[in-house]
Amino acid sequence: MSPASTILDLIGNTPMVELTKFDTGPCRLFMKLEGWNPSGSIKDRTAKSMIDAAERDGRLKPGGTIIEATAGNTGLGLSLIAAIKGYKVILVVPDKFSEMKITHCEGLGAHVIRTRADVSAGHPEYYVDMAKRIAAETGAFHTNQFDNPANVHVHETTTGPEIWEQMDKKIDAVVCGVGSGGTLSGLGKFFAKVSPETELILSDPKGALLAAKVNGEKATPHAFRVEGIGQECAPGNLDLDIVDKGYVIDDEESFSTVRELLKREGILAGTPTGTVLAGALRYCREQTKPKRVVTFMSDRGDKYLPKIYGDQK
Ligand SMILES: Cc1ncc(COP(=O)(O)O)c(C=O)c1O
Image (cartoon, rainbow, N blue to C red; front, top):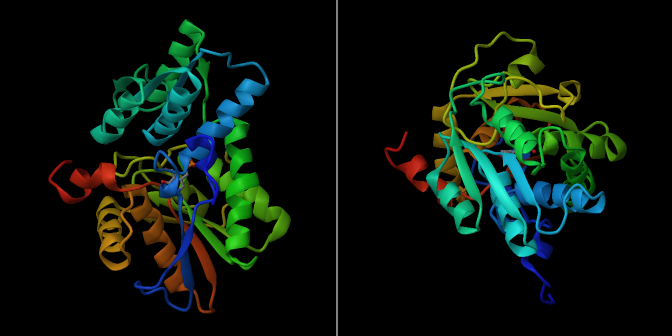
């Protein structure tokens, strides 16, 4: 392998591994290791795609300022790219998120504004509304991953095709979480073209509402400890009609599943991977025919160690 010209050229092309130590019923379950991206998560793809698009159409000028509302991983991706390309970054982060992610962003040079995690859309301290307001006041470029088509496009044109090749073009289902909706929507567009019978399965933290909506069930929103996924309303990027089935996973099951992933398979992942893996395992065990199923390690677990293993609430 020849040397990359910068670390940004190492975004994407992540490995895939079969999980062989869990009970997967009649199915084979594979995990795409997005934690292998340079800043540690699938969001490096999103960050790079949104910045590339904004540079191309002039929304982002040399030396400009980027602002984003983020659970941390998009912020890390943006901070990484900004550090290398000379942009300034402001991140608005809800206060339930892992301090280590924030330290990592600050280490890359980002200015982090902490806001409340316990308020919803419409409240002035809701992280997305706050980022919008600061962008309007300062003229900073708001990447807005929730509504930015470049976020969907990168998964349609990179994540989807990579999975397709790695799985020898045989995939019965993909199990995924929804943060901004970019991954699920982009994969939906890709699989609609190459393999429309591939099912799209959503795994949601209990307390979020999207999986319940997909299944036509009633649910009450409440706070949860899993980071990065779980919304009350579908983001602008996502049409929920593309989703075939939803699973609702409580914090306890998400955390115990991510601990089992490390213990059984040696994969140190973050809390949202526990949620999607738990949903993927339920899907696999419910099947009556053998299926090939793909799920995601969406980020590395290093920054969550105190949260996953310690007393940190
Ligand atoms: C497990 C998992 N799947 C998928 C995603 C995709 O997020 P998005 O909807 O923002 O593309 C995430 C984000 O953290 C995740 O943790």
